[in-house]
Image 1 (cartoon, rainbow, N blue to C red):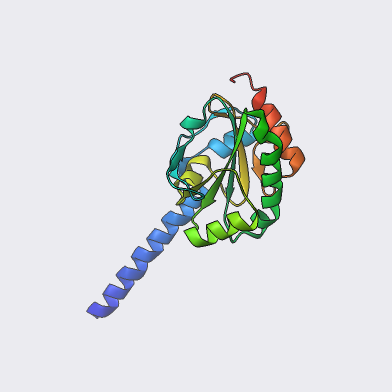
Image 2: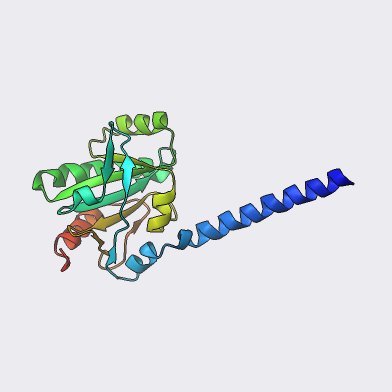
Length: 187
């Protein structure tokens, strides 16, 4: 009898934790950033400092102030991310010489080995930071890949029309987002 009560209690606790997890995922951990941007609003980008995946040390969003930041969330085992990786790298190659734009990859919940294999496979040369999932929550990311455009003053700028890129980015989407961030009135 006592064993049965313990089992019921354990199942109840697990069920409650699962319900909390589902609620947090469905509600973006309270973040409205993605939905605000998708509604056409310019929103302050959540600040962050994360460990680099591609080298040692850390990188912060604040350290990139003064430049447009193309912030691309991805995972090494995500098939659409694999399709998109060459497009993101080519975009970085097109814009890096301007001195006004930086691309940052956010590798979400990967082990270091698979992340480095992905980086090497696609010859990625732009900075990559690691995220355990909290940055995803702050930005309201619901899948992979997703891309945001942060202007020189730290505001996320929506694409016109649309908001941020959900799914695979094209070269045109990247260029349009960068141009929009470069001409944003807050910049």
